[in-house]
Length: 167
Image 1 (cartoon, one colour):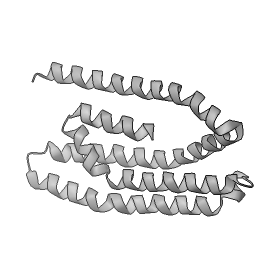
Image 2 (image 1 turned 90 degrees about the horizontal axis):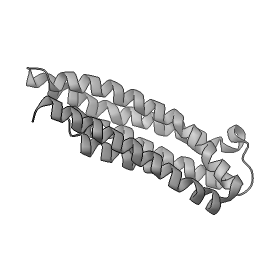
Image 3 (image 1 turned 180 degrees about the horizontal axis):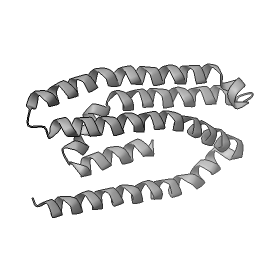
């Protein structure tokens, strides 16, 4: 396959992912407001914003691993890729554990940090717990999923990103 054709596939797959994520957000917004009410929806938005911190950590890990794994993948020395990949497989769960600890602290401090009261305290804790577990697995599995990007399997990579953002 020519480089121009591969480039066109990458561009189309990226735009398709962006359109799918926007359409998903537009479709879910009225459903969430209707089913949760204004206070519940506000809580979900607040918790979503706190998850942004973990998302930033995830983007840092993804970005740095993409660069390092990509350079090693394209290196003429196959041992360099194996060393880099194995290191990433060991370090990613450690970083994921750190993010899980941060979420644990947030769960413990929900009433203090977010000024949440009554029945919303447990809802906020469950939401943060689910986000923490999701972020743990997302960061821990970054090396495996980054291989889709590095090996230019853009359709599979963008499917993963779309599924990730739809959760």
